[in-house]
Image 1 (cartoon, rainbow, N blue to C red):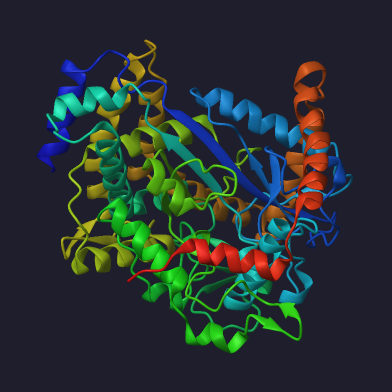
Image 2 (cartoon, rainbow, N blue to C red; image 1 turned 120 degrees about the vertical axis):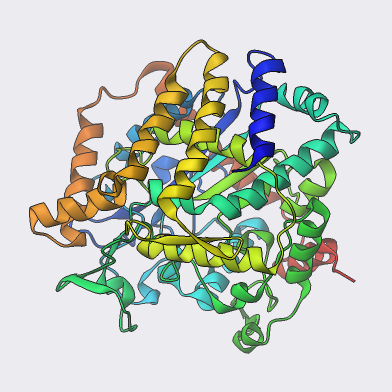
Length: 527
């Protein structure tokens, strides 16, 4: 039990303003593959009726033309964020014809890498850079891995929290530095405790054999078309999903913002022999942006990122250096197949209270033992986390997941009470209680429910996911169509985004070679 987090919770509850934790900003980025009525990946271009994937603030693409990404603005209330996400789904379904949105994190009917179309962003330098970057990702890690989808949860504590917390902590730091230090503490603790998110919200315990191709696996066979882990939670976040040996060797420090920025910058400037073999520009065609460990900052895979809203043309690390950490991006949430938009308010409210817990908990620097424990706990929970006898490593010693999770959730519930106090409700406490029940009942977790429904239906992963995808499309079709001002918001953005892209393309004054040269000269390298 960590006494410091208890003391901080008690101080906030007794001495903080009533609304000290109320009104933090929440935003969602949700990915979904476009698939054909037979479940195969769509190879059609991004629908023009959805606007420009490069400049539409609500609807963009991730790795592939077929991988849509829906983005909500930051909202103070979870229901507002969910409303916008629901509207974006409605707007999209009405404009993709007979295509479906794949509703699970793991893709299914996959051919070879060449069949996966890269996202295209037009002829501008910035648009070409986005596509070349994605081509590089495909060459480095394989295109199939890039089609795995998830939900990113963006969160910032309310602005009025920071002065109150600084005073309660009696810190001598300036407010901006204090805030950045606290957010970096959150990031470190999310790495320590993020296994809990995989257990509670993981929903990918099975996958199509076609995703694995000819690769060997020690997973069990569910049926002739499906592999699975009996106690798996999130194969998406396991070594079967987002992993590669080069990044496994990278150690990006989280001990301070300066070290984090410096290490990322070093990785962007450091040659990687395996990537040099690929080449950069071969026979006049760009294969990747560079042959360095990272092409750009966003290539670094992490379940959590410290972020700041960047100005136009500003790199993420430059934005952090300019103004410090403004919010965090949580990247380890699976699509919840049981929710039409992939996430619900209970999950968002729990995540908010849990992230506050990560701020308040003691967060010393991460030593080698910590990194080993983190890697073990993350990977093992993803594949075996629902086993009642499953144990995690804490300070190098084994502890039952259920015991450690129970300790954390007890504290998270007290934080939820403080959040609820801000609007005289109990919605956050209810959200935490709902997750608490899952700790004692692994069979009620989303991952367990996926396998249970597959067994009851007597189907493998593909047919289960297809049935859900059709049901979700029917759900949105049954809703009253968007109209009036709500429809106008998304229609106007689609139209405006296409014009904005044309203006960007017409404004280029240098060729792509020079554009990349200038980009990397501005990056700056480590000592």
